[in-house]
Length: 389
Ligand code: CAA
Image 1 (cartoon, protein in one colour):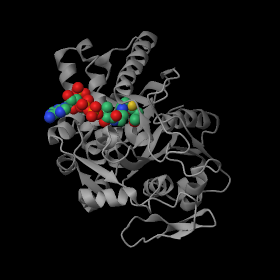
Image 2 (tube, helix red, strand yellow; image 1 turned 180 degrees about the vertical axis):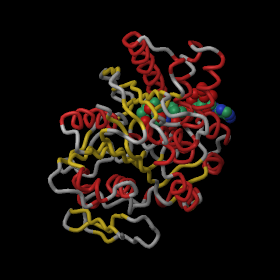
Image 3 (cartoon, protein in one colour; image 1 turned 30 degrees about the vertical axis):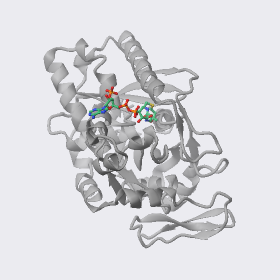
């Protein structure tokens, strides 16, 4: 059976910070952020957006009435969860008005968990061919003001419908994956911000990539020449490039040029959003699909997923006929166009305006958040969500 990604939706919050201005405010050469790190803009979530609203806003764009009936499994990958017990997937299931006869579960393994969701979804569809699975990766990446990780923050969500006979990307059954218990990046239960051993995390990201890539070649006999493009988990856009360049020499000059050009296309959206953790790889895939003019149906795309702690996976997909027809390119152009740039001062204010840490009830000012779905406040320790549509 052919199983894969049938639809992709993307959402970013309504604000962003210009990385050149952030660099100037931090006394850093802007080239460090725009070239050394490879980020132009950083999406910023107001207090009225959390992982649930970002996810629901992304899914809202792609779900139609048939999907609402057929989706019987919601798998929500996030590392910005809002509750230790209740899954974020249940809130999203309600906000979207999905068929109640469904399973809804949150998955966690840092930035890797949406990939785990996709692989589980494949198994579910194989056993239940007429059902559909909604897989979401949604996160707010926070390292703290003035930290080395600050330039690699971001916020957003990618939602995907996984089904048989997919319209976008058929997923092959050829994954290679690797797990090792390391402390490169983590966020203890008591902390709003992530802890990270930055240089170590970079090294491990590449090491895991090399391990799964080598294993993949050994198992399948395939080479770089088999790929039209490789997409990477993108904590910042230079990171994927650092991994890609470790294997580029395996290809002819022509293959190298093609993969380099398509890598640049795959990071255009990420350059303007920043790290969205679980959704980052899929934002890169979306960028590649929507922004390239050369990749044909039938060509193979490689995907590298990495979640600190750590798990890495390499897997592949085949582009489907007329895939461009099923994308929402205009909507995403409009999403980027309608975002409002905020000054560094305003960003710092928004960043520090978090929910009460003791769970006190609060009503939030939502006038500045035009997003269809938003958090309106907390009452009796319960988050209150509103769907304007
Ligand atoms: N012009 C051009 N380039 C410049 C420059 C300038 N003026 N000044 C510096 N640079 C370059 C540096 O040479 C360096 O390039 P290379 O990495 O190619 O050597 C790059 O800019 C970054 O400079 P530093 O290494 O000095 O930057 P830093 O130490 O201040 O921080 C970081 C970089 C470690 C990535 C930090 O941002 C961080 O900790 N980020 C969070 C962790 C992270 O994203 N890790 C990625 C792997 S883990 C993962 O993928 C999971 C996840 O999502 C978190």
